[in-house]
Length: 221
Image 1 (tube, one colour):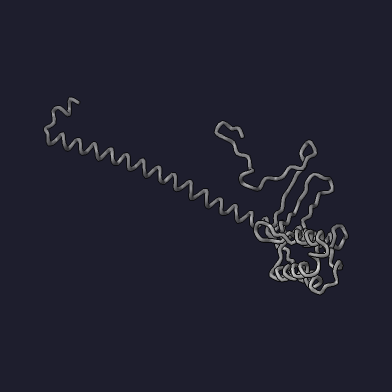
Image 2: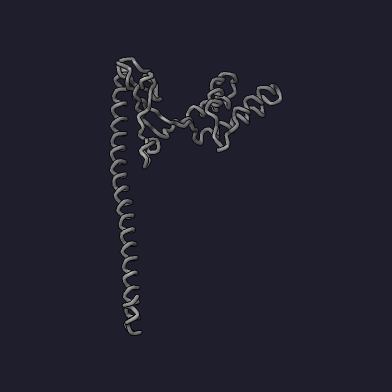
């Protein structure tokens, strides 16, 4: 402070301005260091995540291809049903590891099912409603749709199983249309990997990022 007391007003103003500029330079440098660190962390982690994602995509395709190749072999060998379209699992001879292929599918019906429904309702109203109220109500209930306007596949299969119940052409035509309208849509496919624990339990190898363990700053999970 003694040095400042010896300065003239002009010199004091100049010194204050210099100190303000120094402070601004320090704050700007801190901000630049902060932003550079932030950007470096974000960019490097995203790049590494993209690389890992590409590897996982390649590994998933490899796993699917090898499992389906083995499936063809198992079909010929008779280990799996040849007409089975669902998932399946394989296990090593010593029982320590297992690989499972899961197929998530959805059953749906195209526009021909709407025609089939109309034919059945016409037939029911004309030929069944007054003669057999119980059958009318049962069949009508099987035609009820879900919240999204979809037919219940199990209900439609129940109807088809009763194809020979009536001789009416509308009934028979409706059953045929329901068969033709049915489609199985593959929603997703996944492959899971397991290893036996020391208590003889299959433990999944975690590949989902959220399920992987992480240590906190104290070194605990």
